Image: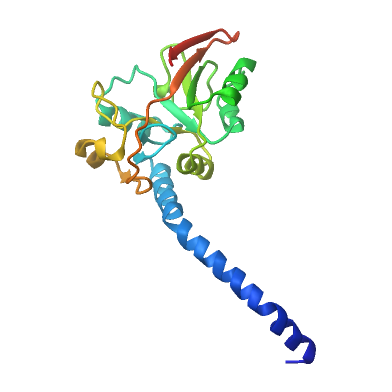
Length: 219
């Protein structure tokens, strides 16, 4: 080792070693969630169903562009496929990919909402036909919760999000409230936030007409 190299390592190597150690610790802390998300995405890509935490209550999810996967969700919930399902996206840009003309008021609602808010929009494209309402509309929500946002971002598609219960039964507010029947019916149960005991409520739902007329479905 020449003199210049010796001076460099003596003065700076300890700092690099410390930074690498801090990065390693950060990776260790993040790894369980990252592994969880990758496992969930693998299932979604194969047309499977997942049970996952969202910005509201726990949801049953699948690839929102895959009709066969959507059919499985209806079967798990024992729900008529004439009823629409809500989908999550990671950003306003992703939402715009699925709706031909988004009314200006939709962006105002998304930007100003103080709680998770689902907007029902018409002119849908690129989503499974069997998750749409009879009028062709769909409920979309931009999630800001870390797990579900990263899931949607890495999957690069909309993900179905419907309450983790049999149709007609109360919506579970925590993971512990979810029945074994639902847990056993999905293909993958996410590990993240299972110990979260805080109570959560479903989102607000606002329906928008193509002209921008606002109808509040659920506050």
